[in-house]
Image 1 (tube, rainbow, N blue to C red):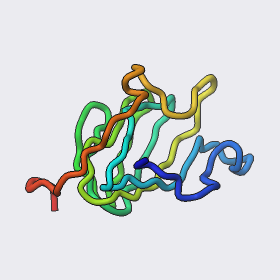
Image 2: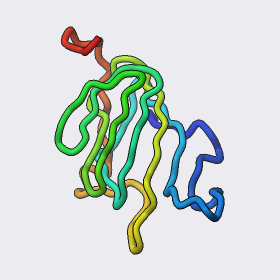
Image 3: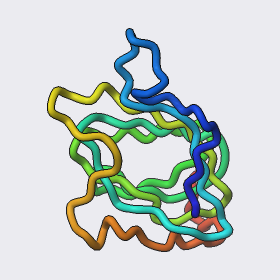
Image 4: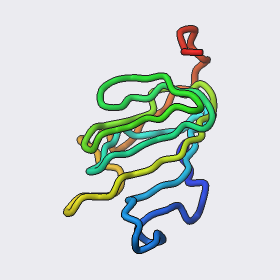
Length: 130
């Protein structure tokens, strides 16, 4: 499985301070050894800070190359996904507070999207930004 929670206690409703309204935050990895990811969205904004690796992601209908130091910002209700991985990815995610009557967890527009997809692991493309 390409996404692994690196801490048994990533920040979420069950273990965050009472004053903290963050929906969740933590570290995840996407490996070049293959695996699955899913096109999903949330009822709140989400941010990924890429700390290691290189990949292509889709957020809000646009594909981007990402590498260490990049931040992917996805607006509430917009879908996002990993399209390709070139070097093992390690990233920190942060989710804004969930609005009243909002839903948590990965949300999917179709049953097919909920199944996830194989993430191709490819060589770094020639046009990858330096």
